[in-house]
Image (cartoon, rainbow, N blue to C red; front, top):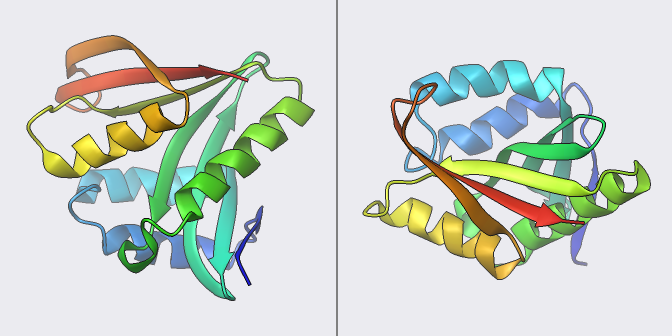
Length: 150
């Protein structure tokens, strides 16, 4: 059937949190607490693969850019095009809104393998690292800011 992406409805938010809770390599307890708020505060889009919730992307818009606040894909669906579908969908929504820039902050801990995969994912989809902050005050650890012109 393939990946279907749509705007999440309220009842999807807890299911999205469940996905993130199962990805402890990427999301800390404090991150999950913040995510619980952000999923309701900003636009969240859900990806379904063969009818099953497989991942989500959470987007914060300004007049000129969109920030990927959270993106997560169930471990068993990673590498099956779910993240790529979510990103492509988000880019299309942003373009329709007239937004020309997409940004994402990710861990800058170069020795931590899960985030090496994350950085490769963004880089292979046209994102460029433009800023590194160590430590990033909000996180207390290194951060890399990636951007992509839409």
